[in-house]
Image 1 (cartoon, protein in one colour):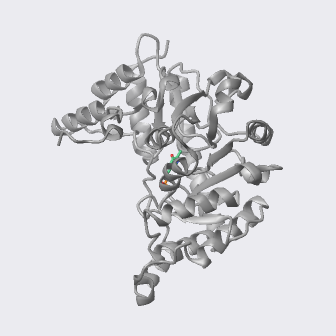
Image 2: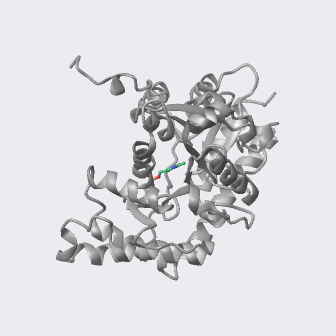
Image 3: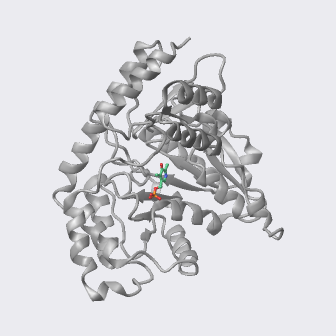
Length: 391
Ligand SMILES: *Cc1c(COP(=O)(O)O)cnc(C)c1O
């Protein structure tokens, strides 16, 4: 077993391993652990989707390999959703491809565009897949710092020209995990211009496109002029419909990028179980979609307000985020993010995520996932308030 590839050997040490160990120890010692660590909705998939799955799973015709390009009905459902929700026209044949969860597509797109020595720009702090897949594909990930003073939006004019010239892909993600930031249409415009100037491709991760608050509705990158010329956008049913375990997502946008991803995938996987794709059709086209996502937004907004208020009461300078089910807050002076998260776990049994796990620019912050019910969240926040005053 000393023959492991360089790419596996060079994988960074799992940053959360130490915390996972401490959580396990705490549980074994009888501590009532509350985990605000996981980005996985706590509520079940709604019955209207489950019911469709139950029907489709019983149909023998669904037991075979799905069509290569994915079910036509699913591609059409995605196109219909984009028309209805974003006013964007998509050709279901050429501009939509189903994914085994959006993570799969985000990881594989790097292989479609990255040659040895190419640079991919990755938001930092950010979802770790952008960096790892770039490295797997032989490319060089370069951080795109997301700074609080800029509303966690990258400053494109700060990117050195030499770096921009070597860049193939620029990953963006709004509403943003882990910061909860949202992007304006103007920023997307600027990104289109930047992509045009340097002939690079934007990969927009829109996993939280339906999770936003205070009546804000997230913008698709494809809504802005020229968006489709330069971008591929990744969508997911995971967070919107509490379907993380089902593994269903899609990529939409530029037909060359969509086709490349499709060609890559046909050599690696054989698509998504047809019954799951039909359940996805139900999710995206049912009249029950809007009431359901509204209910989820209201639920996360109530949780957000509980957590924000508690932190503010303890002296934390936090503002309510406008999207995602995360809260991103600075650690008090004198701690690294990992030290602070360990301290809170030991003192209170509450699990948080250290910002460092999302990149070097995540240092100095921690993330709270609003994926427990209001009672548990209130309890967790009360414990944190007792353990620390922000200073
Ligand atoms: C959860 C998440 C995803 C992946 O979701 P899938 O379940 O693979 O569709 C992608 N990007 C971000 C930022 C996420 O938080």
